[in-house]
Length: 151
Image (cartoon, rainbow, N blue to C red; front, side, top):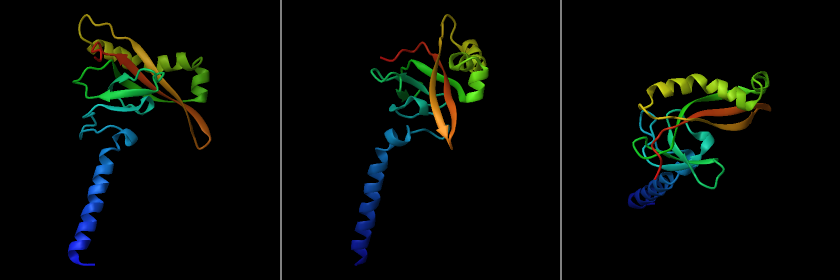
């Protein structure tokens, strides 16, 4: 193969790869800057949201999908905390609702202190059962309303 032909094949392969990767944000998550902040609105699974993400649930998805967006843009919710709970922790805590509520108490109290005067943030949760290596657990996200409704 001549040098020019090899260059063209390599260039074409790189171009196809770059084009394919630009469409991957919906598969691999949103584009983020070096500080982890979302740089463009992207629809993702709600369970893949991260602390600090601003988002609005996608209508008709039973809150399983979210449009995560840069926080400077209109949004309805902010992820303020989260973690994983073992089955034993959920049982000891009196069930999923009580255990997650207790786990999010400090995050929500801190968020309320920073909330704009006159706002009345509300707390919500995203909860998802998980299984890894045969061990059941519950992923939870602590979510607060932001007072910046999406348009």
